[in-house]
Image 1 (cartoon, rainbow over the protein chains, first blue to last red):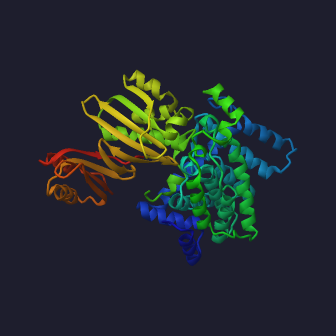
Image 2 (image 1 turned 45 degrees about the vertical axis):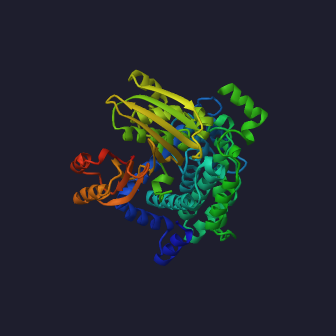
Image 3 (image 1 turned 60 degrees about the horizontal axis):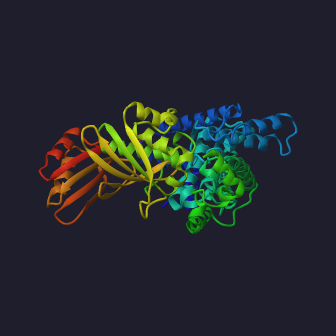
Amino acid sequence: MRSTMDYLALAEEKGKRLGEIVLKEQAEEAEKSQDELRKRMAANLQVMREAVQSGLRGERKSLSGLVGGEALKVETLCRSGKSLIGERVSGAIARALAVVEVNASMGKIVAAPTAGSCGVLPAVLLTAEEALGSSEEDMMTALFCAAGIGMIIADRANVSGAEGGCQAEIGSAAGMAAAAAAELAGGSPQACIHAAAIAMKSFLGLACDPVAGLVEVPCVKRNATAATVALAAAEMALSGIASAIPLDEVIDAMNEIGKSMPCSLRETAQGGLAITPTGQRIQAEFL
Amino acid sequence: MGRSTVFDLIGPVMVGPSSSHTAGAVRLGAMARKICGGQIVEAVLTLHGSFAETGKGHGTNLALAAGLLGMHTDDERIPQALAMAEEQGIAISFRSGDLGDVHPNTVKIKLKAKEGQEVEVVGSSIGGGRIIIGGIDQFKVEIMGDYHTLVVLQNDLPGVVAQVSSLIAATQINIAQMRVSREKKGAHALMIIETDQAIDPAALALIKKLPAVNQAMAIEPLD
């Protein structure tokens, strides 16, 4: 089973970034060149960029009609100069909404780690890129860093809402994105790990209770708020704040919480928001 | 669960909306198609748990059908898969059912091929688009689609395992994992051999000719 400590020890010993350690390990395990893996990751990044662009145009509607046009609304507010929280965070929200809108309308996205949570990582990474003026190579390393955090989660727990609730999807996405953003900003491997832990702790216990079983309500807006949490977690870690509970233990706690969650809160649409009067009404109307 | 890779966590590139209910379902259909190995004419799918409860809203039916037609998770024709199946004269039907103590996202796929063979595949979508095939006909298996896989149905006789593995070894193919199971002593038995390289067609032909072997198939890994 993978452990944060293994990656951290290697990164510190070799004076490398986490993403570089993950890339090297993966190339060796797959018996492929690092270049080949980098190319494949670059293709994923390209799909992420296209999904953001497509979603921001605001022309998409989900099959149910519940979702569509939200990204453009936030983008418009942001451009008007009336943003409450500033261009940076507002931009991240718009990007996350854009990607998830594309997903809800059966468009092409990159699962990161899942489709239901596909907006968080591109939103955070592209926002950090804009803030920092990052190179394409640094973006690649950050993506491998994010994937490394995800692999630890998949090994120790899982990334499935049906198994572990929304904390396993959105929580994992936020952890991956926070670590990647911290790495892009030049944080130490230790800081990246703390960023992931801080972000994941914010989502422990989160139920997967989609209305009518669709990846729309509350998933779409939750991706946007998760992007802001990931940025906040990275900011804290970069300032030198540590997570009191180490990442491995946070992941183990998430696993334990997921196991004790009733089936009704694990993607079955039989609990939580799905069975509120309004949730039931929406289900009756759209299915 | 097997060790994950970076592209399990950032990927697949897929048509939404759900990695487990859409992309995973495409891969389950695709794997069942590979296991059947023939031209599918009829498919009866039994959806269990979360697949049954929320499948409709996720396009799970469309995704499973798309996989049975050989599509990949990023194929933008997935929304039209059922209509395409109808055009091609493939009868696909769905029902809900309790498949017992299995993963919440599980489906049983019963396939009939034009060539006459019938096969029943049970598989689960375990998150992020990853899958496990848990059963082929009456046998319990564990195939993730990550490796080249050789499935051998044989009579439970002494020496068969050695014969098969030596034919594989003779073609310089490395075995990653191997499992042998059987119905009962002396009856039908099943071998699942996962290899690092593709099974040599000549070796497969020789394995098929072994007197104790009833059926052998090489399944490619999923893309």
